[in-house]
Image (tube, rainbow, N blue to C red; front, side):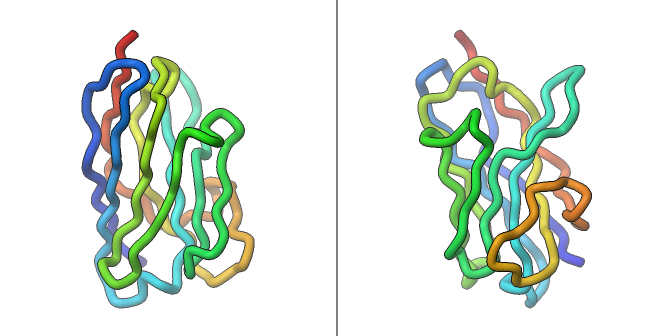
Length: 126
């Protein structure tokens, strides 16, 4: 398993941008698809985005499509989530997660992610 540490959360006004980072430990980062999930108070953790091991495939939740971009740098063992045009409903704790395997189309189900970070808070004010 890999250990994951998120950073980059904070408070931003609606319409603003934030970039989350997730640093992974270990030498097998490129063997994992990487995802971002979020959990708002009183709600279940939901899928946001996922990127394949090579970075060649990306998938997004409909609620963030066109506003968020997931990317990765395998040389730096890091995955990113660029969030633009933020809305108050994007307020949540954002979690980075790792899914072992080099599937061309990684799963979007949280049950298939075996490693999780501690989360970083994103708050969008109206």
